[in-house]
Structure formats: C-alpha cells, structure tokens
Length: 96
Image (cartoon, rainbow, N blue to C red):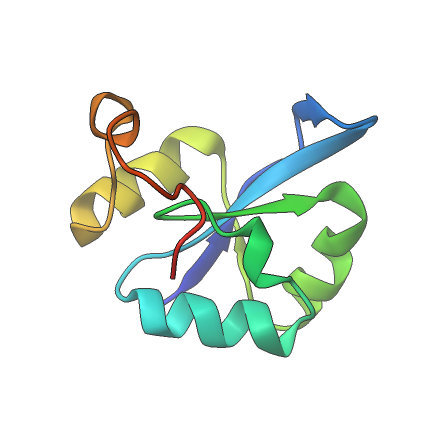
C-alpha cells in the first residue's frame, strides 16, 4: 500500500494544487491526510486536493511523488477511481 502525490499544477483560489491518493484503500488515505493536517473538506470522492505548500510535509511523511499519469493509473488499478462521468450525479462531492 502506498500514498501517492502528483505535481501541484492545477490552479484554483490563487494557488497551485496537487492530488493525494491511495493505491489501496480510502481508510489509508483518510488516515494519512488527517495525520498530515489535510482537512476533510479537501476530499473529493477518490482523492484529496492538496496545496503546493503541503507537498514537502506529505513527502517527508512518506507519500511517494509520482507523475499525474502514474497517479491516475494507480488510482484506476486500485478500484477507487470515480470517473468524471459518474461524479455529476453524486449529491455531495466531498463526502467521506
């Protein structure tokens, strides 16, 4: 089991953002995020959106830095991926 984080390249709210995922279990992902001060509101169905300034502490805490394609492949392989087409009908995008 591994926690993966990609590059912070997604602009929003005046910052750049990365994605934090587990390659095995959401419980593992939630525990890692909580232990590294990532708030529950950052969770988006299958990943956390994390600001660029959080990357050093996430990497120091054991997250593995990967490219966006590798992160996506690992998330799909884990069975945890929620495809974009399935997101629109979900009532609460930030549920746990």
